[in-house]
Image (cartoon, rainbow, N blue to C red; front, side):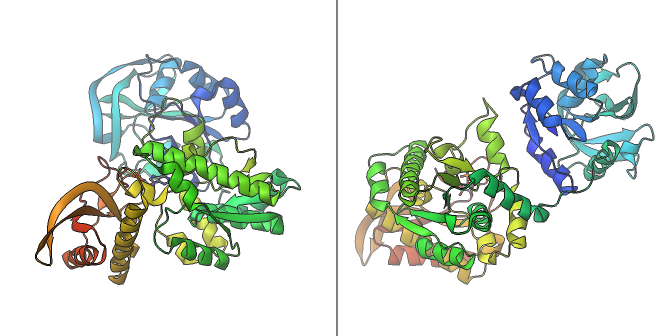
Length: 503
Ligand code: XMP
């Protein structure tokens, strides 16, 4: 169990633990002592994770005291380490030298936590404060230039480390976590592929005898959720694909065909006029997302009513559950469709079989379920579709332009065989207009931007170095085949500071 004090790494720690074959959950400290107590039942160990502040600013002492009292194995990481130092009676304060980035570590004492790990190695640190003197009875296990107590053990089962073993830049991080999990006695029994039957049971139980709809988009999450629900409910489930008129060219047919192959041919509901009507005059990107989410919810609820369904099956995954529910104050960068965009109260009982799983675990399930490769590998299309790839107001004319341009980008990238290495590749219709010359006459028209990025999880991304010839061909085809476009530019910005989509 990972207690999250609002740092960046709680998810990464929980994922690493799962990669090491143990199930893990995240519980925000903000959820309060009862929630922690409830969730800790059945946990072998408790990780106290990082946090943005100083241990002197906001009092989380109760959480560390509770973890120590629980008698379970405890691992404090960074802020969690300092919190342990504080509540156990050590001295915590400004580090003699704040450490950010790669930092050398020296292991001082033999301990099961460092089994198989060398005496000196490099880890990734990020801290201003440090444990300056160990708590009474604690053993100092490691030090670094800015952390006299970079690692410590108190009693048999309480450990703290100042660095972040969960990040890839820390050497021996996975070994350290594995050692701690062994100390905790956490059985190695987690494998996402093994839980298909459990998830099917879960949906059956939650749905009771009711009819259900599954909102499907063609993405891997909603497809896996619907396939599981089909196994649980048989014909009582109707997969519903809402055509909001904002899909890329051929997407509705492509998705229907793939889902049929996966055994969940969807009911396609054409509501494109309604979406376009609702989007008229809307220029703000977040407002567009809200409008699309609202109308999507309405159409879905009406469809469910028409089918006599009381249950909605959704492909929500773990990061969405934690991020939308339990992290007040976390900065909203974009309101993602399946998280903030969909109205909460649709009059349907929501069943989310994937709510405990990470993306890579859902992909693993997709493989175990034998879903077509094209679904697992399909590039993501944002919920609001082309609405967030048209800067400013969405009109039929602009939709037509971006859809044609986007199809050309897709065709050329795929023809060159480059798509496998890319996370996404698409066209954006900007609000810029520019001058061109067509057939000896001045023309004045739109500027289309092409975006192609490499990424592993969409949290960070790099512009793809597409071959010049492919880019030139894309520009040539878009300007000759798409009326109204006079110029094509390529977006070479990374995320951060840009995002993948333009809006
Ligand atoms: P950004 O633009 O935030 O995108 O870097 C990260 C990933 O999320 C997708 N995306 C969305 N997906 N609804 C979605 O379902 C949305 O509103 C939305 N906005 C962005 C984006 O395509 C990329 O894969």
